Image (cartoon, rainbow, N blue to C red):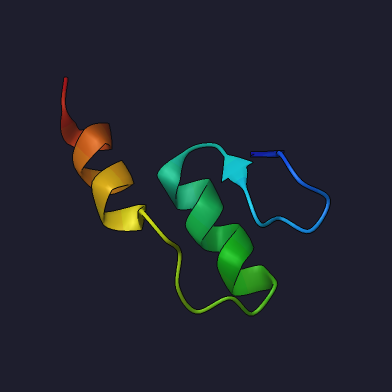
Length: 43
């Protein structure tokens, strides 16, 4: 996972890594996560 801003307001990485990090910092939702999951399923 790569944080694009110091406060993790923007990050790039694998869907599951982003979800894990969000849980670690107490974030309950991630904007765009449904789209990211759909894109991750495309071969």
